[in-house]
Amino acid sequence: MGVLEDKDAIRELLACYCFHFDNGEFERWLELFTEDAVFDLGTRGRFAGRDALRTFLTIIPLTDGLPGMRHCVMNSIVAVDGDRATAQSYVAVVQGGRTVGINVMGRYEDRLIKHNGAWRFAERKVHFDMMGQR
Image (cartoon, rainbow, N blue to C red):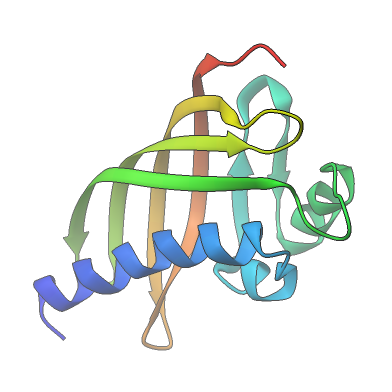
């Protein structure tokens, strides 16, 4: 697989993160991370390993089993170095409810690893640049 194919696979991984999470497909979402992955939300918590990621899933608000939001990832910059890569992306989180609006504007900083031919998150750091008033 060449660099362009790797970048395309990584961008698909970034999209799968959004679709799986927003659709409540949490086991599929967990599979996007390495076993020892770190999910760093800054002051909102740091979760290391899949067991910790499962704990994170128990603290998010759900309605009928779904998070009630849509993640929109854009402007991704991906750098590949063999079986390792980094990505930076903007993220907008659209929240539902009585009114629909953007609740979060921020950035993801990702470290990725190719494991058994598939790209996975080794570390995902979230920067909350702007927060909506809800």
